[in-house]
Length: 231
Ligand code: SF4
Image 1: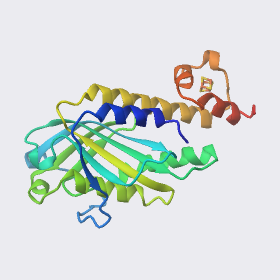
Image 2: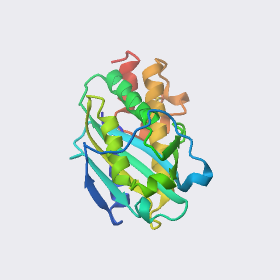
Image 3: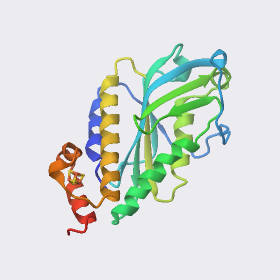
């Protein structure tokens, strides 16, 4: 399952010129997950992170689990900040496309079951928007991206098909946040096309509004051809 590999390459080259701090995954990370949505009022908020957050799933090798911070960490942030969170997620190389597709959806749901104390995340799948309100108390207690990233990796890895995860948090003002918006949009479009392919046996490229994606992403057309029973 390699439909998102070009986007992974684009992200890697898009952040290559920026300073990065890397942390290994901490499996023993100690921070409370509340297990439910927490409402952080504006008066209790230290700052908000506002931007996009999305997963790029692949069965290609991505390397060891890690958390990368590009830009200021939480304790250095003094005001609301543009932000991107990107997770590369390596899954087992399943040969059944339906299983791979179901897996992508399950992995996506993980972010709706992730409630670190003092880190109120609001997301939409449709636009990949991600807004986070961080509480003053959490900041005083030492919350940082390394902690959040390790909690996220742990959450994804509850799924036994997830082999490795790399999480990137970007707050660097030198970063091109429009670029991340563009990748988030492409990610959404590829996911929607997969959705169409897996749930629609109608196969008519000439009248299909998803054609630009299928022309760009290798293997999409073949997958729909196969799924429509034409192979
Ligand atoms: S393969 Fe053709 S019909 Fe299927 S989603 Fe792509 S463009 Fe549409």
